[in-house]
Length: 132
Image (cartoon, rainbow, N blue to C red):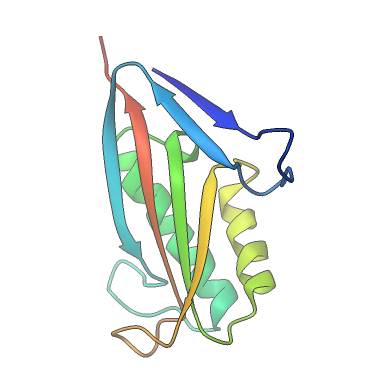
């Protein structure tokens, strides 16, 4: 399996994300459902967007690890923020956990979540090489 990050010279090159990701060869696909800023007991992390984003990203990494993957396998990341949230604060918190892996990223703002204490939700798609 090979993952190629596509950044055509005719498009702005972002240090934070890729314009496209091409996956070729034998792989399994992992779809990670929305991860929120909650601990293992289901308790929402205090402190707003920064702490909730850090925890949501840690939760995402835990799901990836359970599948034998890490952030380098992620080909698409969706970050959903509650309207009015400071996206810069969320980005900084995300980068602390995520590092510099520049996959495709989509950031969306919504009016709210099913649990009104949530301010962020993160989901992902990952391509994992098939073991020989």
